[in-house]
Length: 293
Image (tube, rainbow, N blue to C red; front, side, top):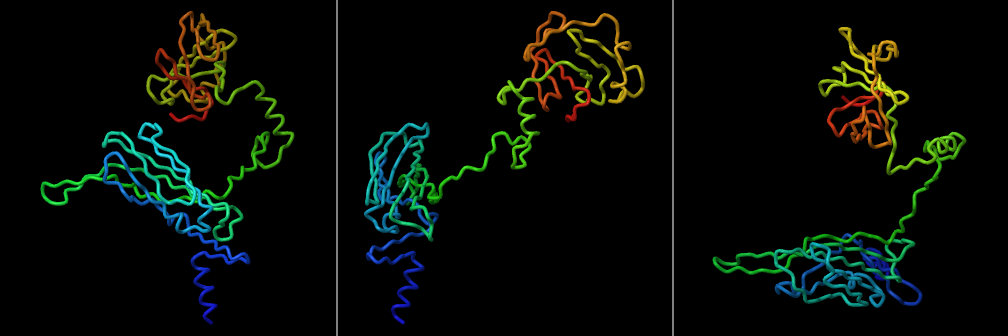
């Protein structure tokens, strides 16, 4: 009976008995946080990590410490084996913040039956805190933010990423290949849109108030005006070249700069090419595009 009680206690604490009498213990990583051992000095700190006490075999505990200031400058880095404390001197303003990162690993310890050896990462920060202990007497010390550990022992398995599965159905098909061919030469970082087509201009920010349409076609810009009480999308789509006003303007477009009757302007697109903005001012909606007003 006594032996059974001991085994239950061992299981709760994370002990794993082995034939070689080597004791392995672990606790949840998020139960670990750093502790200020000596933090009352303005230019020196000493921190304690409980992982070395809670994780066995202790001889295999490795602590990789790194300290930086608020601008990312390295203040101190150190790798310690089987040692739970770290201390160092520094010279930073008390108004600054220090950031601390410590990776605790143990290649001979496994937590809760994990197939991956122990690895726990704590990322925290320190700031100078002053407290008035009695009226007129102020004491200061470096204080920790209070972050806890994150289990990083699990490997980051890459998601299945079929590079040419265009429709995302998990299978590369002829449709995906044809889609790839249609995008040949294009860049995701710099999508290109065509200026050719019909564009609506509105005196307001609402496309429904559009009273003018410009059609870019083969180097010429044809202009159409609304001459009916209601000029909706179907009305603009019904117009043909014979209904444009005489003497079309000229244009050229290199994907970024539009030269409209010898006047250059930089244009940008949004809504997948459905809205055009001009550096000279003005907004145009592509006819038929499903874009917000």
